[in-house]
Length: 376
Image (cartoon, rainbow, N blue to C red; front, side, top):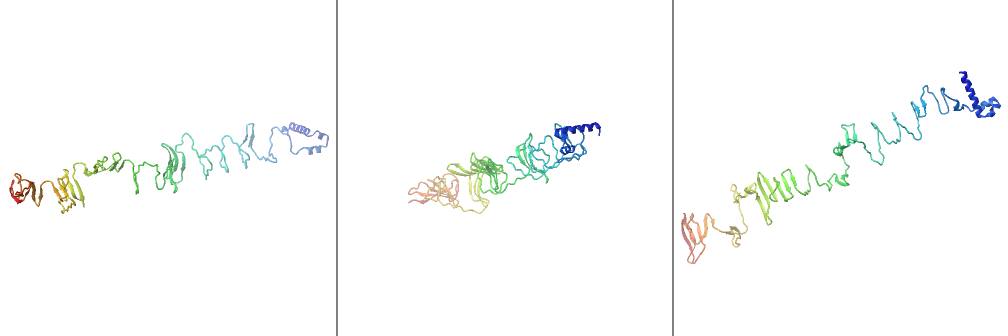
């Protein structure tokens, strides 16, 4: 040891003893030693130098290199192992941690590349996705096939799900607290749809015009239904093979069924025409290519009369032909025209001593006519 250093140490020790108790200088030197506190020196007497394997009641220095440096700005520790940190801990700057086990961590912001674990979120606030671009942000499930997504899509503005969404039985989807869809029915506010296929309908109410397969049309403005036409000419119009068939009313007091253009019209049974109306209005009862049909008239039948006479079953205004014989009415035999044998002209002005009528006894133009049935 340097002598000067030793002298300085002894002098410092003397000063320390004086500072402790001035009465000690006149007593026993051993008593002086006993009065000195064990391992007690004022820090004012230690300046620089190296203390190796420094030990105290709470410190054990076993370092072979400098591990702790104290400056006015901070305490610098190259490596730190801590069992328990009591009271609050504030860390400024970046902190790198390899493994952290904690019961509770309270932070304002967490920035992490990956979070692995079973996460239970217990907080009375929402999860917020914030930033200048939140497109595609949300929840993603990976590890089994393609990634499953429930994310925000900014174009268009919506929440996108890559998978089907299954709702618990008895629950429903609602908009503005109004039910729009459940497992059995659409909500009452759903008034528009582009349905392309439905199952069995029990009831259907349609307000306004509608179109079925561009073939069945209902025109709400005219209150008419068309099959094969968008502009029906009656309450119901069916157009097929360019032939239009109408069913409706001609006016407020008369119904109507027939063709719209100059087409003939048939009423059929067994796919065979039974009543045929030609385009010019001619009517045919029965079918010449099938067995004769029976036509029954229950009531008075009138021909060319507006009001048939109820006293007669057949009321004809004009000549009739019965059993291939022509029956006419006149006040004399015919003077022109062609007649056949057996044709009869009934006297329209019968008088006493006159005849009931005249009969053609020889065909010709007008033929030979003889009177019959003298009136007495």
